Image 1: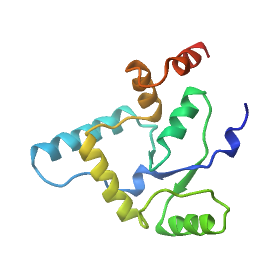
Image 2: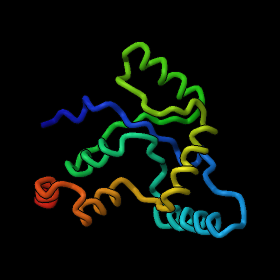
Image 3: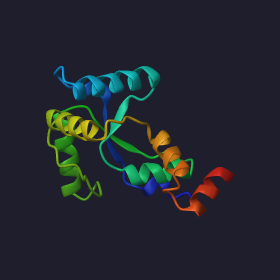
Image 4: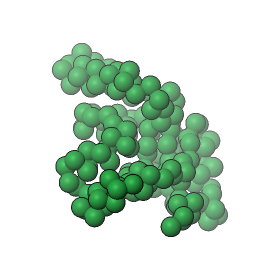
Length: 144
């Protein structure tokens, strides 16, 4: 109990720093952009995209705990994070991208493949509903 402070931070990027709209007039581009616009409209407080740490953030949500994040605002931030890993001051950085542009391309590919936008809390609740999470975890979450 109380060890959430030792969990390494999850890398995130402010949604205003990346361009993930799809250009084009095809059906997929229209559907994707419509889903993105709807998500942004219905989730005005969702300001960041999670770049890695889905399991950690789901676990934190189940425990009703916050988790620390590492916010990338520039290419320099990514470079600094890599140096912190090299020096052992940051446990790991499991993203492959080295720039905001690369992150934008990766996010576009991911969202275009899944055609779904959701918050960590929504993902956790969906996993509970679909019984993807073990029953004992669901039971503990609902009891809190």
